[in-house]
Length: 225
Image (cartoon, rainbow, N blue to C red; front, side, top):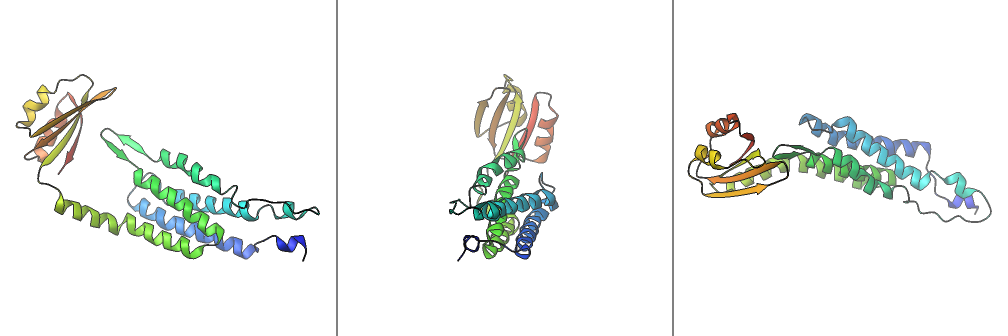
């Protein structure tokens, strides 16, 4: 048996199949993110899955001619390029995380980009069943599981209402306490450019939140019920 025959190759049809499958699965997850108007949508997820698949194909099969030349067998690791996707996707995911005042958005989208890269790698490596199963489980986690978790938390969450108020750095909490009235628990955390006050009250309603938002010494308000 010749050396060329011993080196695994893929036909053009199989290459196209894996690329199309990766793109379709990535687009399916991205479509869910698009519906929720998230930072990374269908095109971004599609491109991440497609790129991961292509990197995997290049890593495993892209150097066939180089390996087939010469009389000696050249040892090569088929995952040498694809392995860099695992670390490299973290930079793209970090770009999807946005901090808005007291809230941090984009963590789920960053995680979906990470899993989409894994799905693309699975499709590129030929693990079609694993890629499809991971896509289905990811969609379940992003949609039905989200609704179930929210309803479960609402049932078991304690009755106390919590409100988090962001003040300017060094701002006294006395004007804030005058506005909210009786406080069951108070936590003050000073950061470099702001002061974050967490209050547990007997009751918080939209009128209190609106009144605090209008105060000049309040930068942001986050309401937990």
